[in-house]
Amino acid sequence: MQEIENAGKSLTDSGTFLNLVRTYQDTPADPQTQSSLLLSLGQTAWPCSYIEQMYLITEDAPYLLSSNPSMKRTETDGAGQILYQTWLNVMRGQTTWALFQDEAGGVSKIAYWRPVQQSDDSPSSLVCVLKDEYLKSLMAGLNSREGSLNVIGSYQGRMLYGDSAFTDWEGSLADHPMFSQAYSRPENSGSYFAEEQGTGWLVTYYNSLEDGWKYISAIPEHRIYTGMADRKFLYILLVSGLSGVLFGSLVLYFLVSRPLGKLQKKMELMERGQLEPLDFTGGNNEIGLVLKAYDHMIVRLKKLIDEVYVQQLLRKQAELSSLQSKMDEHFLYNTLNTIYCKASEEKAAVSASMILKLSQYFRLSLSDGQEKIPLDEILEMIRAYLQIQQMRYGQTLKCKIETFPGMGNYISLKQLYQPIIENAVIHGFEKKPGNHSLYISFCHIDGRLRFAVQDDGIGMSQERCVEVTSEMPAFDPIQGRGYALRNIREQIRIVYGDEYGIKIDSQPGHGTRVVLEVPLERR
Image: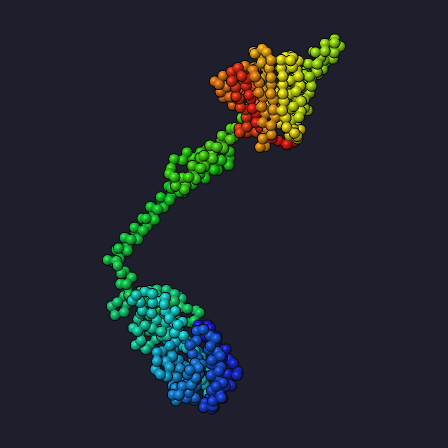
């Protein structure tokens, strides 16, 4: 309603409008003055979305001027004076909200009455009528309950709107038995029970600070309990509801809060390094799935930690063995050089050549302590070893080596390859006299290095082949049968993972094929 009040105030504060009103009071029949006033009323009323019409009434002018273009000026002489006297007598000439009834005796409407400040001997009033559409939207919320009675009143107790039951009430709403408490209570809103003609009513009220109105709604008490035999049913319903809430809380505690509390405690232990599973055996709801996933995670973590611990032990043991072997290799390398010099002095050419090749092999094997060396150096180690074996077997041993270009650009563990060739020579050829051939290949396949050794030795049965293959994962640092393959398999697992390893294919009397696969690693 502030928009209507602001529109009325801006118009009555206008000096131009006040001069027009003064001229109109002196010569009310002057058409030019009437037209100017009608234009001022229309220009003020039309932009305001809440104003239906705006009227000007005066004490001396008999006409009723309207902002409505279809009405403009009423032809009923004295209508303006009658309305002015009503405002003066009933509303005491104050700025207020009150009912307005047009000259045709139509339906009363809510209007904002405001005095036009002139001299005391020529008073007048501006009347701003509220649109019915806005009033209906206000009452829609109040009329939502069947059987309710609704009233809109001013703070002074004047009724602005009321249902048909209150149309005969002519006094102040503050004196009505149903609404007196709404005016006597200091709160801006509230509710209370009142009785009128033997009927109990629940009355609610609200003081609107925006428009200065008091909204009051009354509902018969029996309507509140419609559908209930008596109030006991309401109490039973209330107790049942509370019981349901309590039961739901217990279910929530046992199914959600309690398991999550246990999970929180276990996670706090996990932060301190204690990995303990929940051993949850509940259902498959969302919480159960979370707890089972936690148990699975703890089991996996413990397994990974154990594996890492074992790998660390193996690494330390391997480092110690490596240091010891390097000392032995250095000693042996130096000793072989000494023996080679002595054999050369004694003119033992074959022995000197074998010792020289063996010395070269150990020089490559030492490789300044590096675990991984280029593939071309690994190839030199293999050739040095094969030359030693050919000196032993003579023309009965033929070897063929297949390589791929750019082998020097890749590196690999240096101790993986020679033991496989040594196994082929010792286990394949020594127990089978005659001529022998050995085929060795390095292949580059899909980012992997495939190293294969094929001999034509005595071979082995399918059962023995399966036995050797199954023994490789069970690494035992104590040397014995199958130690070389187990050692190679364990080195691959530690460095490259379980997806790489060794495959063996053999037939009795037809030889054995051993294939090793590792990632192809650039220098």
